Length: 238
Image (cartoon, rainbow, N blue to C red; front, side):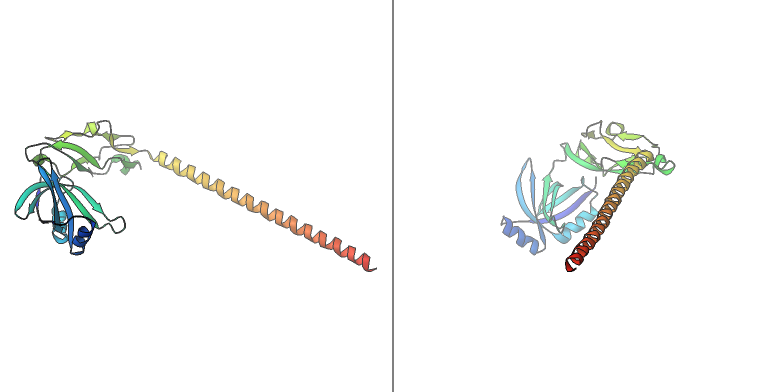
């Protein structure tokens, strides 16, 4: 597993106010914690963080975090972002031991185009994007690569079908990772939606016709009433 260096400084003041000031100064507030380490509030320069993230390989990346000369090997556990701008607001780093197993999630990547999609028009439905594993930090794979080229219509791959060297898989073995769905299922759903749409249009047209008929009847009735009133006035005038 690739290790990425990153530097940080201690934060002396805590709370929302100092954290806001830290972000305004171009640094990201963060914290480092672990089973054998007291939580350490730190700040990382945005530029340094961007460089480190570009060099990382994903959720399983090990960072060599240097806090004013003291180094710890850590993994990034949580990124808190602004819900509107998606800007990083806070980071949580977890200090690890290189001799103890670590629970972590690695990304799942798919290789190839399924034959069921290429020749039969099926749909590849991905139901898992990450795999939860346990292993030593030095054995963390960058990702799980799943080859899907031989999958036909109705075929699927489950957690129990994959193997990762030197790793204990924690995700439930019965979970489906990917399945190739038949195109008829998709067409049937689309057809059902189309029928509902047509029914809605027909009902709308019938309602419009009914309103138009009622309007015409109302107009005719008004004309008849006008005629009767005219006759009645004529007789009175005589």
